[in-house]
Image 1 (cartoon, rainbow, N blue to C red):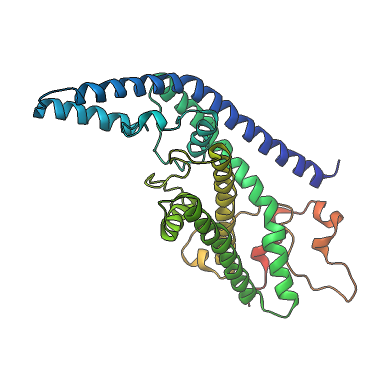
Image 2 (cartoon, one colour; image 1 turned 90 degrees about the vertical axis):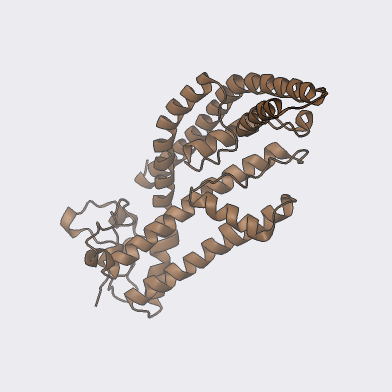
Length: 318
């Protein structure tokens, strides 16, 4: 099998295993935490009825009630319309939680109640976080040639100098990411989430894709929301693809900084060239009608000496 085919097959395997890993985590979290949540909901309902049936409320009983309510709210259980609230640990919600756990977004709107769930979260994240970074890195590496190297090469062949070409490409990629992963999703979220404004949606997108995850805005948590499981799965896909594009944007900026000498000036490490595509020069001086070397499979698969491997960073800096 061709090396490129093996690479795509391996990447497909990584993504499938990642999905299976999320499903496995969702099943475990749901089976462990949902009974605990049901018990807490029952306790909160009884506590609310007991508090309302008191003929005289003193400061001590009010404080006790508030402490219980705030503690339950920390675990995603509210005394407000408690029976109509959707479960935080059904399969879709558990998978959403698992996804925010391994991507380090971690909104914190839902946390494990049981000691078993907390212990499993530690083990699950220890394996899931590095694996998620591995999958994201592999996806970005496969996107480097079609979204970075080839467009920069096209700009250079149109007559632009190497440095301006990389700047123009980076700005175009930045605009594309802002439009497709910030502004457009923000408009969608402000439409689907009744209480969200466009600014709230933009704020959520930024906080999520920067993995800050404050948790003050979380989609799919409103009571009676239609198609909630499908909505949560869609948000998970958005988060994964969005994080991948953010990583691609950062990697492109790092390569541009290498070319402009910024990393050398600041004495920072240069961006590593991990892919065969990365190791091919964007533009070569070749005769009329000759096939560029970066378009030939033979050249892409031919091993080179480490010191002679050209890359994005080997573009003439003059």
